[in-house]
Image (cartoon, rainbow, N blue to C red; front, top):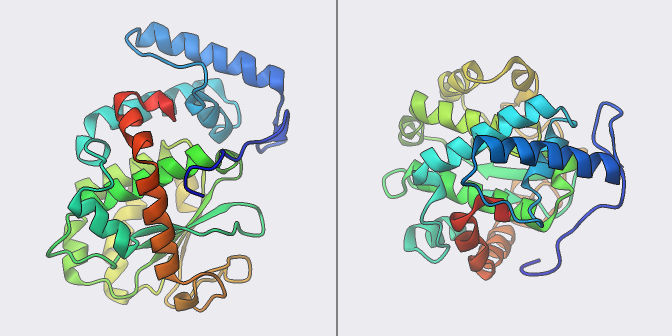
Length: 279
């Protein structure tokens, strides 16, 4: 994938709730939100080729008011959470190491509903060596690049599979309530739809942490949470890695693929740090 041409969509597409995105609706809605945003934040520079507003319109099924709220929250989070969204050099040792480990791995095959599946390996890192903030930084780096390279993710959404096998007390202690709140708020205000959040291989002692996660979620997101003590209940529609009992690529092959992809797109991160509207 690396630096190949982005995957785009045709002139019209259904984005949910029977809303058809046409060229006319797309243009007028983007212009409406763009003019509002520049009135609110005149210092912003929004390149003509930017797709960020479009991604939020799709996520909200072209609800203009909701798009404005989510987009403004997204921008404020990018500016406030410098620990996640600054210094995103993929060759920095701590970032390079987490990329090698494979903490956040989009699968290369979509599910049966054409949704992007991402595997989040919650216990892959060593909590005595790796900061949780750096783990979240790598997660967002890969998610940003994924949307940049494949804009259909903004239409069909994301299925997140959290593998909890091997989670220790050290991992749990890294996830303070304030950290969890930031994570949930970011998920709910990102320009892609979280369609399903499945926690698999969940040890009993992790229930407290999961309950904290759910307490910060909107009712709609809570309805999309599935907790499984063993493997995925969605394995019939997901091509999971071999290590999780599936028939897809191995975790290590995926980790190598995404490390190379992120590092080959180093310039993308420097451009986004200058201006998030390069997305």
